[in-house]
Length: 482
Image (cartoon, rainbow, N blue to C red):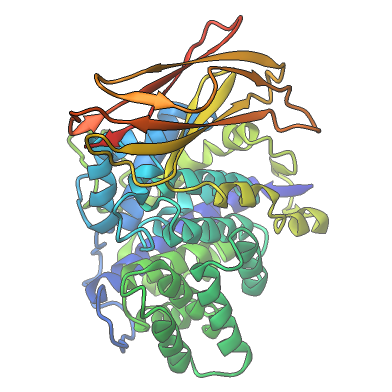
Protein backbone atom coordinates (compact mmCIF):
# COMPACT_ATOMS: atom_id res chain seq x y z
CA UNK A 1 0.00 0.00 0.00
CA UNK A 2 1.15 3.54 -0.76
CA UNK A 3 0.12 6.26 1.65
CA UNK A 4 0.27 9.89 0.52
CA UNK A 5 0.14 12.48 3.28
CA UNK A 6 -2.43 15.13 2.38
CA UNK A 7 -0.29 18.16 3.07
CA UNK A 8 2.78 16.69 1.40
CA UNK A 9 0.67 15.83 -1.64
CA UNK A 10 -0.78 19.34 -1.81
CA UNK A 11 2.70 20.81 -1.52
CA UNK A 12 4.05 18.65 -4.33
CA UNK A 13 1.19 19.57 -6.65
CA UNK A 14 1.70 23.28 -5.95
CA UNK A 15 5.47 22.94 -6.44
CA UNK A 16 4.76 21.21 -9.75
CA UNK A 17 2.94 24.26 -11.13
CA UNK A 18 5.42 26.76 -9.68
CA UNK A 19 8.27 24.77 -11.22
CA UNK A 20 6.35 24.68 -14.49
CA UNK A 21 6.00 28.45 -14.47
CA UNK A 22 9.67 28.99 -13.63
CA UNK A 23 10.86 26.81 -16.49
CA UNK A 24 8.35 28.21 -18.95
CA UNK A 25 9.17 31.81 -18.11
CA UNK A 26 12.91 31.22 -18.16
CA UNK A 27 12.90 29.20 -21.38
CA UNK A 28 10.39 31.11 -23.52
CA UNK A 29 12.77 33.91 -24.65
CA UNK A 30 15.04 31.27 -26.22
CA UNK A 31 12.37 29.07 -27.78
CA UNK A 32 13.25 27.83 -31.25
CA UNK A 33 16.98 28.53 -31.14
CA UNK A 34 18.75 25.54 -32.58
CA UNK A 35 22.16 26.36 -31.19
CA UNK A 36 23.51 25.93 -27.67
CA UNK A 37 22.49 28.72 -25.30
CA UNK A 38 24.47 30.25 -22.46
CA UNK A 39 21.89 31.46 -19.95
CA UNK A 40 22.42 31.89 -16.23
CA UNK A 41 18.87 32.56 -15.09
CA UNK A 42 15.89 34.77 -15.85
CA UNK A 43 16.01 37.37 -18.62
CA UNK A 44 12.59 38.71 -17.61
CA UNK A 45 11.71 41.35 -15.00
CA UNK A 46 10.74 40.30 -11.51
CA UNK A 47 7.03 39.63 -11.13
CA UNK A 48 6.53 38.80 -14.82
CA UNK A 49 5.17 35.36 -15.65
CA UNK A 50 5.35 34.67 -19.36
CA UNK A 51 2.31 32.92 -20.84
CA UNK A 52 2.90 29.38 -22.02
CA UNK A 53 0.67 26.92 -23.86
CA UNK A 54 2.34 24.13 -21.86
CA UNK A 55 0.31 25.24 -18.84
CA UNK A 56 -2.62 26.85 -20.67
CA UNK A 57 -3.88 23.67 -22.27
CA UNK A 58 -3.91 21.94 -18.89
CA UNK A 59 -6.36 24.54 -17.62
CA UNK A 60 -8.71 23.38 -20.37
CA UNK A 61 -8.16 19.75 -19.39
CA UNK A 62 -8.96 20.66 -15.78
CA UNK A 63 -12.25 22.14 -17.01
CA UNK A 64 -12.97 19.00 -19.05
CA UNK A 65 -12.33 16.72 -16.09
CA UNK A 66 -14.49 18.84 -13.80
CA UNK A 67 -17.33 18.86 -16.33
CA UNK A 68 -17.25 15.27 -17.62
CA UNK A 69 -15.45 13.34 -14.90
CA UNK A 70 -12.77 10.66 -15.08
CA UNK A 71 -15.13 7.86 -16.08
CA UNK A 72 -16.17 9.43 -19.39
CA UNK A 73 -13.27 11.68 -20.32
CA UNK A 74 -11.76 10.58 -23.63
CA UNK A 75 -10.14 11.85 -26.81
CA UNK A 76 -13.46 12.84 -28.38
CA UNK A 77 -14.35 15.12 -25.46
CA UNK A 78 -10.88 16.63 -25.42
CA UNK A 79 -11.11 17.10 -29.19
CA UNK A 80 -14.32 19.10 -28.82
CA UNK A 81 -12.60 21.18 -26.13
CA UNK A 82 -9.82 21.96 -28.61
CA UNK A 83 -12.35 23.42 -31.01
CA UNK A 84 -14.17 25.42 -28.34
CA UNK A 85 -11.49 26.72 -26.05
CA UNK A 86 -8.02 26.64 -27.67
CA UNK A 87 -7.40 29.28 -30.39
CA UNK A 88 -3.83 28.61 -31.62
CA UNK A 89 -3.26 26.95 -34.98
CA UNK A 90 0.43 26.18 -34.36
CA UNK A 91 1.88 23.06 -36.02
CA UNK A 92 0.12 19.90 -34.79
CA UNK A 93 -2.50 21.98 -32.97
CA UNK A 94 -3.74 23.44 -36.23
CA UNK A 95 -3.52 20.16 -38.15
CA UNK A 96 -5.44 18.26 -35.49
CA UNK A 97 -8.16 20.89 -35.35
CA UNK A 98 -8.40 21.13 -39.12
CA UNK A 99 -8.82 17.36 -39.37
CA UNK A 100 -11.54 17.40 -36.71
CA UNK A 101 -13.36 20.18 -38.53
CA UNK A 102 -13.32 17.95 -41.60
CA UNK A 103 -15.00 15.22 -39.54
CA UNK A 104 -12.06 13.03 -38.57
CA UNK A 105 -12.26 11.75 -35.01
CA UNK A 106 -9.24 11.17 -32.76
CA UNK A 107 -6.77 9.54 -33.10
CA UNK A 108 -7.30 9.83 -36.86
CA UNK A 109 -7.37 13.61 -36.39
CA UNK A 110 -3.79 13.49 -35.13
CA UNK A 111 -2.56 10.98 -37.67
CA UNK A 112 -3.82 12.09 -41.08
CA UNK A 113 -1.39 14.30 -43.06
CA UNK A 114 0.25 15.38 -39.81
CA UNK A 115 3.90 16.22 -40.39
CA UNK A 116 4.10 17.31 -36.72
CA UNK A 117 2.84 14.14 -35.03
CA UNK A 118 6.31 13.51 -33.58
CA UNK A 119 6.49 16.99 -32.06
CA UNK A 120 6.26 18.42 -28.55
CA UNK A 121 2.67 19.50 -28.10
CA UNK A 122 1.51 16.62 -25.89
CA UNK A 123 4.27 15.66 -23.45
CA UNK A 124 4.38 19.27 -22.30
CA UNK A 125 0.82 19.09 -20.96
CA UNK A 126 0.91 15.88 -18.92
CA UNK A 127 1.23 17.22 -15.37
CA UNK A 128 -2.50 17.59 -14.89
CA UNK A 129 -3.00 13.87 -15.53
CA UNK A 130 -0.12 12.88 -13.25
CA UNK A 131 -1.30 15.15 -10.43
CA UNK A 132 -4.84 13.74 -10.64
CA UNK A 133 -3.39 10.22 -10.53
CA UNK A 134 -0.43 10.42 -8.12
CA UNK A 135 1.51 7.17 -7.70
CA UNK A 136 -0.76 5.58 -10.32
CA UNK A 137 1.17 5.67 -13.62
CA UNK A 138 -1.25 3.51 -15.59
CA UNK A 139 -4.12 5.86 -14.76
CA UNK A 140 -2.02 8.88 -15.72
CA UNK A 141 -0.97 7.39 -19.07
CA UNK A 142 -4.58 6.51 -19.86
CA UNK A 143 -5.51 10.18 -19.98
CA UNK A 144 -2.17 11.25 -21.46
CA UNK A 145 -2.77 8.97 -24.42
CA UNK A 146 -6.38 10.12 -24.89
CA UNK A 147 -5.06 13.69 -24.83
CA UNK A 148 -2.03 13.21 -27.06
CA UNK A 149 -3.69 11.22 -29.83
CA UNK A 150 -5.99 14.13 -30.72
CA UNK A 151 -3.12 16.03 -32.34
CA UNK A 152 -0.37 13.38 -32.51
CA UNK A 153 -2.19 10.22 -33.54
CA UNK A 154 0.09 7.26 -32.91
CA UNK A 155 3.25 9.30 -33.42
CA UNK A 156 6.29 9.81 -31.25
CA UNK A 157 4.54 12.78 -29.66
CA UNK A 158 2.05 10.37 -28.11
CA UNK A 159 4.79 8.00 -26.91
CA UNK A 160 6.54 11.01 -25.36
CA UNK A 161 3.37 11.97 -23.47
CA UNK A 162 3.01 8.44 -22.11
CA UNK A 163 6.68 8.39 -21.09
CA UNK A 164 6.54 11.73 -19.26
CA UNK A 165 3.14 11.16 -17.62
CA UNK A 166 4.32 7.84 -16.18
CA UNK A 167 7.44 9.46 -14.76
CA UNK A 168 5.51 12.36 -13.24
CA UNK A 169 2.90 10.13 -11.61
CA UNK A 170 5.56 7.82 -10.16
CA UNK A 171 7.58 10.84 -8.95
CA UNK A 172 5.07 11.40 -6.14
CA UNK A 173 6.75 8.50 -4.34
CA UNK A 174 10.00 7.93 -6.30
CA UNK A 175 12.72 10.60 -6.32
CA UNK A 176 15.45 8.63 -8.08
CA UNK A 177 15.64 9.99 -11.63
CA UNK A 178 17.09 6.76 -13.02
CA UNK A 179 14.20 4.76 -11.58
CA UNK A 180 11.73 7.28 -13.00
CA UNK A 181 13.30 7.07 -16.44
CA UNK A 182 13.14 3.28 -16.24
CA UNK A 183 9.43 3.48 -15.37
CA UNK A 184 8.81 5.82 -18.28
CA UNK A 185 10.66 3.54 -20.70
CA UNK A 186 8.62 0.55 -19.54
CA UNK A 187 5.47 2.21 -20.87
CA UNK A 188 6.57 2.85 -24.48
CA UNK A 189 7.73 0.56 -27.31
CA UNK A 190 11.38 -0.39 -26.94
CA UNK A 191 12.03 0.34 -30.61
CA UNK A 192 10.36 3.77 -30.82
CA UNK A 193 12.41 6.91 -31.43
CA UNK A 194 11.47 8.28 -28.03
CA UNK A 195 13.09 5.29 -26.32
CA UNK A 196 16.07 5.49 -28.69
CA UNK A 197 16.84 9.08 -27.66
CA UNK A 198 16.57 8.29 -23.95
CA UNK A 199 18.85 5.26 -24.26
CA UNK A 200 21.38 7.37 -26.16
CA UNK A 201 21.33 9.94 -23.37
CA UNK A 202 21.80 7.27 -20.69
CA UNK A 203 24.72 5.78 -22.58
CA UNK A 204 26.38 9.20 -22.79
CA UNK A 205 25.86 9.90 -19.10
CA UNK A 206 27.05 6.48 -17.97
CA UNK A 207 30.18 6.73 -20.11
CA UNK A 208 31.18 10.16 -18.83
CA UNK A 209 30.38 12.06 -22.02
CA UNK A 210 30.30 15.85 -21.45
CA UNK A 211 26.79 17.28 -21.44
CA UNK A 212 27.43 19.42 -24.52
CA UNK A 213 28.66 16.42 -26.47
CA UNK A 214 25.68 14.41 -25.26
CA UNK A 215 23.38 17.17 -26.44
CA UNK A 216 25.06 17.24 -29.85
CA UNK A 217 24.72 13.46 -30.19
CA UNK A 218 20.99 13.78 -29.49
CA UNK A 219 20.65 16.48 -32.12
CA UNK A 220 22.50 14.35 -34.66
CA UNK A 221 20.44 11.28 -33.83
CA UNK A 222 17.20 13.20 -34.45
CA UNK A 223 18.41 15.08 -37.53
CA UNK A 224 16.05 13.15 -39.80
CA UNK A 225 13.07 14.17 -37.66
CA UNK A 226 14.03 17.85 -37.63
CA UNK A 227 13.64 20.51 -34.95
CA UNK A 228 10.86 20.85 -32.39
CA UNK A 229 10.42 17.07 -32.19
CA UNK A 230 9.69 15.11 -29.04
CA UNK A 231 12.50 12.52 -28.82
CA UNK A 232 15.38 15.01 -28.62
CA UNK A 233 13.53 17.60 -26.53
CA UNK A 234 12.33 15.16 -23.89
CA UNK A 235 15.91 13.91 -23.75
CA UNK A 236 17.12 17.51 -23.24
CA UNK A 237 14.89 17.76 -20.16
CA UNK A 238 16.22 14.43 -18.89
CA UNK A 239 19.77 15.61 -19.63
CA UNK A 240 19.17 18.49 -17.25
CA UNK A 241 17.91 16.10 -14.59
CA UNK A 242 20.86 13.73 -14.93
CA UNK A 243 23.75 16.15 -15.38
CA UNK A 244 22.23 18.63 -12.92
CA UNK A 245 22.68 16.02 -10.17
CA UNK A 246 19.66 17.05 -8.13
CA UNK A 247 20.32 20.79 -8.18
CA UNK A 248 17.26 22.68 -9.44
CA UNK A 249 19.11 25.70 -10.83
CA UNK A 250 21.89 23.75 -12.48
CA UNK A 251 19.41 21.29 -14.00
CA UNK A 252 17.14 24.03 -15.35
CA UNK A 253 19.99 25.97 -16.93
CA UNK A 254 21.45 22.85 -18.54
CA UNK A 255 18.13 21.85 -20.08
CA UNK A 256 17.44 25.31 -21.50
CA UNK A 257 21.01 25.67 -22.73
CA UNK A 258 20.45 22.62 -24.95
CA UNK A 259 18.28 24.89 -27.11
CA UNK A 260 15.32 24.02 -29.36
CA UNK A 261 11.94 23.96 -27.54
CA UNK A 262 13.36 25.61 -24.44
CA UNK A 263 10.13 26.67 -22.76
CA UNK A 264 8.94 23.05 -22.91
CA UNK A 265 12.13 21.45 -21.64
CA UNK A 266 12.48 23.95 -18.81
CA UNK A 267 8.81 23.80 -17.82
CA UNK A 268 8.63 20.01 -17.70
CA UNK A 269 11.90 19.77 -15.78
CA UNK A 270 10.65 22.30 -13.23
CA UNK A 271 7.36 20.47 -12.83
CA UNK A 272 9.07 17.11 -12.36
CA UNK A 273 11.39 18.57 -9.72
CA UNK A 274 8.39 20.00 -7.89
CA UNK A 275 6.61 16.65 -7.84
CA UNK A 276 9.70 14.78 -6.70
CA UNK A 277 10.78 17.09 -3.88
CA UNK A 278 7.99 19.57 -3.19
CA UNK A 279 8.45 23.27 -2.56
CA UNK A 280 11.65 22.65 -0.59
CA UNK A 281 13.53 22.10 -3.87
CA UNK A 282 12.36 25.34 -5.52
CA UNK A 283 14.98 28.11 -5.05
CA UNK A 284 13.42 30.87 -2.96
CA UNK A 285 14.78 33.66 -5.14
CA UNK A 286 13.43 32.06 -8.33
CA UNK A 287 10.04 31.36 -6.73
CA UNK A 288 9.85 34.98 -5.56
CA UNK A 289 10.88 36.21 -9.02
CA UNK A 290 7.72 34.83 -10.68
CA UNK A 291 5.28 34.63 -7.78
CA UNK A 292 2.10 32.55 -7.89
CA UNK A 293 0.30 34.09 -10.86
CA UNK A 294 -0.78 32.23 -14.02
CA UNK A 295 -0.74 34.13 -17.33
CA UNK A 296 -2.48 32.62 -20.36
CA UNK A 297 -2.05 32.98 -24.12
CA UNK A 298 -3.62 29.85 -25.61
CA UNK A 299 -7.02 29.78 -23.90
CA UNK A 300 -10.18 31.42 -25.23
CA UNK A 301 -11.12 33.28 -22.06
CA UNK A 302 -14.28 34.54 -23.73
CA UNK A 303 -15.65 30.98 -23.86
CA UNK A 304 -13.93 29.31 -20.92
CA UNK A 305 -14.86 30.88 -17.62
CA UNK A 306 -13.45 30.29 -14.16
CA UNK A 307 -9.87 29.54 -15.23
CA UNK A 308 -7.56 29.38 -12.17
CA UNK A 309 -5.61 32.62 -11.83
CA UNK A 310 -2.88 31.28 -9.53
CA UNK A 311 -0.87 28.14 -9.01
CA UNK A 312 -2.47 27.85 -5.58
CA UNK A 313 -6.00 27.85 -7.00
CA UNK A 314 -5.03 25.40 -9.75
CA UNK A 315 -3.42 23.07 -7.23
CA UNK A 316 -6.48 22.96 -5.01
CA UNK A 317 -8.84 22.18 -7.89
CA UNK A 318 -6.57 19.42 -9.16
CA UNK A 319 -6.24 17.98 -5.65
CA UNK A 320 -10.03 17.85 -5.33
CA UNK A 321 -10.23 15.51 -8.35
CA UNK A 322 -7.73 12.94 -7.14
CA UNK A 323 -10.14 10.77 -5.16
CA UNK A 324 -12.64 10.24 -7.94
CA UNK A 325 -9.91 9.82 -10.56
CA UNK A 326 -8.26 7.04 -8.57
CA UNK A 327 -11.64 5.41 -7.99
CA UNK A 328 -12.58 5.62 -11.68
CA UNK A 329 -9.35 3.82 -12.59
CA UNK A 330 -9.73 1.20 -9.84
CA UNK A 331 -6.52 2.25 -8.15
CA UNK A 332 -6.51 0.27 -4.93
CA UNK A 333 -2.90 0.70 -3.89
CA UNK A 334 -3.00 4.44 -3.09
CA UNK A 335 -4.40 5.92 0.11
CA UNK A 336 -4.49 9.62 1.04
CA UNK A 337 -4.49 10.39 4.75
CA UNK A 338 -2.93 12.46 7.50
CA UNK A 339 -0.43 9.68 8.20
CA UNK A 340 3.21 10.04 7.13
CA UNK A 341 4.06 9.14 3.55
CA UNK A 342 4.96 5.51 3.00
CA UNK A 343 5.31 3.23 0.01
CA UNK A 344 5.43 -0.52 -0.38
CA UNK A 345 8.30 -1.61 -2.61
CA UNK A 346 6.08 -4.13 -4.33
CA UNK A 347 3.69 -1.40 -5.42
CA UNK A 348 6.57 0.72 -6.70
CA UNK A 349 8.00 -2.26 -8.59
CA UNK A 350 4.61 -2.70 -10.26
CA UNK A 351 4.91 0.81 -11.72
CA UNK A 352 7.05 -0.76 -14.46
CA UNK A 353 4.43 -3.32 -15.44
CA UNK A 354 3.71 -2.70 -19.11
CA UNK A 355 0.62 -4.83 -19.78
CA UNK A 356 -1.75 -1.87 -19.92
CA UNK A 357 0.75 0.37 -21.68
CA UNK A 358 1.13 -2.19 -24.47
CA UNK A 359 -2.58 -1.95 -25.23
CA UNK A 360 -2.36 1.84 -25.41
CA UNK A 361 0.69 1.90 -27.64
CA UNK A 362 -0.74 -0.80 -29.92
CA UNK A 363 -3.70 1.37 -30.90
CA UNK A 364 -3.20 2.50 -34.50
CA UNK A 365 -3.45 6.13 -35.52
CA UNK A 366 -5.79 5.47 -38.46
CA UNK A 367 -8.66 4.41 -36.26
CA UNK A 368 -11.21 5.58 -33.75
CA UNK A 369 -13.59 4.07 -31.20
CA UNK A 370 -17.22 4.56 -30.24
CA UNK A 371 -18.95 3.52 -27.01
CA UNK A 372 -22.25 1.59 -27.23
CA UNK A 373 -22.61 1.05 -23.44
CA UNK A 374 -22.99 -2.73 -23.83
CA UNK A 375 -19.74 -2.74 -25.78
CA UNK A 376 -17.59 -0.60 -28.00
CA UNK A 377 -16.81 -0.44 -31.68
CA UNK A 378 -13.62 0.48 -33.47
CA UNK A 379 -12.94 1.35 -37.10
CA UNK A 380 -9.44 0.76 -38.46
CA UNK A 381 -8.60 2.14 -41.88
CA UNK A 382 -6.22 0.19 -44.11
CA UNK A 383 -5.16 3.43 -45.81
CA UNK A 384 -5.79 7.17 -45.61
CA UNK A 385 -9.45 8.18 -45.07
CA UNK A 386 -9.76 9.46 -48.65
CA UNK A 387 -11.91 8.25 -51.52
CA UNK A 388 -12.46 9.24 -55.16
CA UNK A 389 -15.28 8.32 -57.57
CA UNK A 390 -15.20 4.60 -58.30
CA UNK A 391 -12.42 3.92 -55.80
CA UNK A 392 -12.52 1.63 -52.78
CA UNK A 393 -11.33 1.83 -49.16
CA UNK A 394 -10.84 -1.16 -46.89
CA UNK A 395 -11.75 -0.99 -43.21
CA UNK A 396 -11.81 -3.46 -40.35
CA UNK A 397 -14.50 -3.22 -37.69
CA UNK A 398 -13.76 -4.48 -34.18
CA UNK A 399 -16.60 -4.94 -31.68
CA UNK A 400 -15.70 -5.65 -28.04
CA UNK A 401 -17.93 -6.66 -25.15
CA UNK A 402 -18.17 -4.43 -22.10
CA UNK A 403 -16.26 -6.12 -19.25
CA UNK A 404 -19.09 -5.13 -16.87
CA UNK A 405 -21.77 -6.53 -19.19
CA UNK A 406 -19.81 -9.52 -20.47
CA UNK A 407 -22.67 -11.76 -21.58
CA UNK A 408 -22.53 -13.05 -25.19
CA UNK A 409 -24.57 -11.17 -27.75
CA UNK A 410 -26.00 -11.73 -31.22
CA UNK A 411 -25.28 -8.73 -33.44
CA UNK A 412 -26.90 -7.54 -36.64
CA UNK A 413 -24.93 -5.15 -38.88
CA UNK A 414 -26.49 -2.84 -41.45
CA UNK A 415 -24.81 -0.19 -43.63
CA UNK A 416 -26.38 3.24 -44.17
CA UNK A 417 -24.67 4.53 -47.30
CA UNK A 418 -24.35 7.79 -49.23
CA UNK A 419 -25.99 7.72 -52.64
CA UNK A 420 -24.06 5.55 -55.08
CA UNK A 421 -21.82 3.93 -52.44
CA UNK A 422 -21.67 0.16 -51.94
CA UNK A 423 -20.11 -2.24 -49.42
CA UNK A 424 -18.81 -5.75 -49.96
CA UNK A 425 -17.23 -8.34 -47.70
CA UNK A 426 -17.87 -9.08 -44.09
CA UNK A 427 -20.96 -10.56 -42.54
CA UNK A 428 -24.22 -9.05 -41.48
CA UNK A 429 -24.83 -11.29 -38.45
CA UNK A 430 -22.13 -11.83 -35.84
CA UNK A 431 -21.75 -13.59 -32.53
CA UNK A 432 -20.02 -11.52 -29.84
CA UNK A 433 -18.46 -13.97 -27.39
CA UNK A 434 -18.64 -13.80 -23.62
CA UNK A 435 -15.81 -11.70 -22.19
CA UNK A 436 -13.86 -13.73 -19.66
CA UNK A 437 -10.39 -14.82 -18.63
CA UNK A 438 -10.42 -17.09 -21.69
CA UNK A 439 -11.69 -14.53 -24.22
CA UNK A 440 -11.35 -10.79 -24.71
CA UNK A 441 -14.90 -10.71 -26.02
CA UNK A 442 -13.93 -9.24 -29.39
CA UNK A 443 -15.04 -9.98 -32.93
CA UNK A 444 -13.71 -8.38 -36.10
CA UNK A 445 -14.93 -8.17 -39.67
CA UNK A 446 -13.48 -6.67 -42.88
CA UNK A 447 -15.38 -4.50 -45.34
CA UNK A 448 -14.61 -2.81 -48.64
CA UNK A 449 -16.40 0.49 -49.25
CA UNK A 450 -16.68 1.61 -52.87
CA UNK A 451 -17.75 5.06 -54.01
CA UNK A 452 -20.12 5.69 -56.87
CA UNK A 453 -19.73 8.24 -59.64
CA UNK A 454 -19.99 11.17 -57.24
CA UNK A 455 -18.33 11.89 -53.90
CA UNK A 456 -18.81 14.82 -51.57
CA UNK A 457 -16.06 16.69 -49.75
CA UNK A 458 -16.96 14.62 -46.67
CA UNK A 459 -18.69 11.22 -47.00
CA UNK A 460 -20.04 9.21 -44.08
CA UNK A 461 -21.02 5.59 -44.64
CA UNK A 462 -22.46 4.52 -41.28
CA UNK A 463 -22.44 1.02 -39.84
CA UNK A 464 -25.46 0.36 -37.62
CA UNK A 465 -24.81 -2.33 -35.00
CA UNK A 466 -27.76 -3.83 -33.13
CA UNK A 467 -27.29 -6.22 -30.21
CA UNK A 468 -30.43 -8.33 -29.95
CA UNK A 469 -32.29 -7.55 -26.74
CA UNK A 470 -30.40 -4.30 -26.14
CA UNK A 471 -32.07 -0.89 -26.59
CA UNK A 472 -28.88 1.03 -27.38
CA UNK A 473 -27.95 0.90 -31.07
CA UNK A 474 -24.33 1.45 -32.02
CA UNK A 475 -23.37 3.67 -34.93
CA UNK A 476 -19.90 3.77 -36.48
CA UNK A 477 -19.46 6.47 -39.13
CA UNK A 478 -16.62 5.81 -41.57
CA UNK A 479 -15.53 9.33 -42.49
CA UNK A 480 -14.04 9.52 -45.99
CA UNK A 481 -12.77 12.76 -47.43
CA UNK A 482 -13.55 13.30 -51.10
